[in-house]
Amino acid sequence: METFVWDRHFTTDLDTVDDQHHALVDLINRLGEHLVAGPADDTDLEAIFGQLAEYAIYHFAEEENLMAASGVDPRHVDEHKDLHRRFVNQVQSMWHARRTIATATTVLHEFLAAWLSFHILGEDQAMARQIKRIAEGESPGVAYAREADPVDNATTALLGALRNLYHVLSAQNDDLVIANRNLEQRVAERTEALARANAALTDANRQLEKASRTDGLLGIANRKYFDEKLREEWQRGRRERHPLGLIMLDVDHFKRYNDSYGHIAGDACLRAVAGAAGGALKRPGDLIARYGGEELVIMLPHTDVAGALAVARQVLEHIHALALPHCDSPVAPHVTVSMGVASRFADTARSAESLIAAADAALYAAKEAGRNRICGATPHDPQAGAAMPDQPTEGLR
Image (cartoon, rainbow, N blue to C red; front, side, top):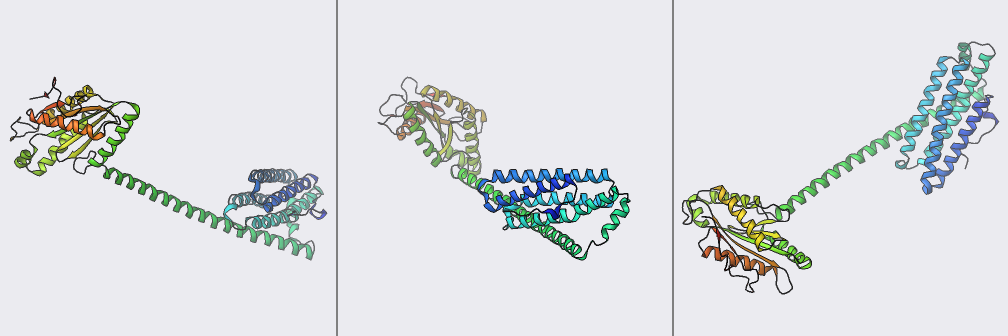
C-alpha cells in the first residue's frame, strides 16, 4: 500500500533535497503497509518508525543548513524550523498514543500524507524557489516577499487547501493526543487509587488475621492459634524426628490478687507476666500463648526436656524480676508462677494432646509441691503425667 505516490511534480530541482524526500516517501509507505497489516510484528513496526523519525530529523537539519548556506531570509528559515519541530513533536506524540486511539492507522495515514504534501509542495518548493532567485542575484528579502505573489490560481488554491488540511489535521491530532493523554492520566489515577485501595484491603486483612490469632487482653497468641501451631509442629516433628518442648504456666493465687487489687490491676498483672515470659524466649519459632484465664503456654520446637527446663528457669527469673507486690499470697510477697515442663518426640502412637497432658500434669505437680516452682514431666513416662522423681521441683522462693 502506498500512502503517498511520488511523481515529477514533487521535485524541487535540488537533487539532495529530492533524494531525501524520496527516501521519506518510501519510509512513510513502509510504515503504512505495516500499520494496515496489523500488530503481527511490533518490533518491525517500531524499527520502521524509528528510522522514519531519525531520517526526518536528519533531513530537517540538512534543509536548515542548506537555507543558511544559501542566505535564505531569516523569516522563512524561522517558519521552516518551527514546522520541522512541530512535526517531530506531533508524530512522536501520536506514535506513543497509537494504542489508545481507536483509528490510529487512519489518523497516522491522513496526517503523514497531509504533512508530506504540504512539506514538499508547499514549504520546500518555496524554499527551492528562493534559493534559485538568490543564486540569480535577487536579495533574500525580495525573494521571500515574492512568495506572497500567486504563481497561478490553480496552484495557489491547491497550496492553500494543502496548508489548511495540514493545519486542521494537526490541530485535530493535537486535541486527540491531549484527550488520550488525559484519558491515560485518569486511568493511571484510578489504577493508583485501586492499588491504594487494594493495599489498604490487604493491610486490613492482615490486621484482621493478626487480630484473629491474638489475645485481645495480653497481646500474645490466643488459644486457637496455639492449637493450630501445635498441630503443625507436631506433624513437622513426626516427619523430621525432633522433640517438641512445652511449658504450662499458671499465676499463683491469681484469684486472691484480683480480690485484693481489682480486676483492672489483675489484667495489668497478666500483661506484665506475659511480657516477661515472652522476653525470655530467644528463637523466632518459640511461641507464647494464652491458654485460658491466668494460664499461659510456651511451645519450644526442637527442644528436649533439659532445654525446656532451662527456658522455664529463664522465664521464672524474668517474672520474679518484676517484683509485682502480692500482699495476699501465702507463697511470697510478690507475684509468683508455677510451671510444668514436658517434651516429646512425635510418633504415630501419640498425639499432640499427650504433650499437653504431660505438661499439665507437671504443672499440677508444681502446685501440689507448694507453687512458685517448676516441675518437669518424666520424658519416658508412658502416663506422660508424673513429675520427674529425681528432679521434682525447680523453685525460687
